[in-house]
Image (cartoon, helix red, strand yellow):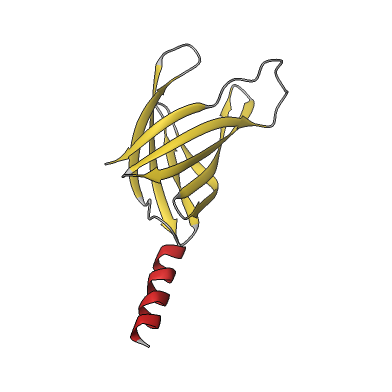
Length: 124
């Protein structure tokens, strides 16, 4: 009986996946080859992920954030000169780092799609 209870508690603890709450930072090269820094403040409540992305000039709320096991995903909507861009971030927590990719969602289809950019985030 004790083994069954312990197994259920372990399953419940791992069902929610990793806890990514906290501040994470990383960088990647942008389309021009310039280094672009990223900072995120993640707030996790079970499988729901919220928080903000911080940039040089603004902070943006995360939308549609989810955590499933060691996988995370969220959407960021930004506006520049009246143009709205939606970006989907997806990643996996492995060995204390989040390996993420980002890619634009919607908008006109370019002839040659840009490759998704990879970002390695580390918790502060």
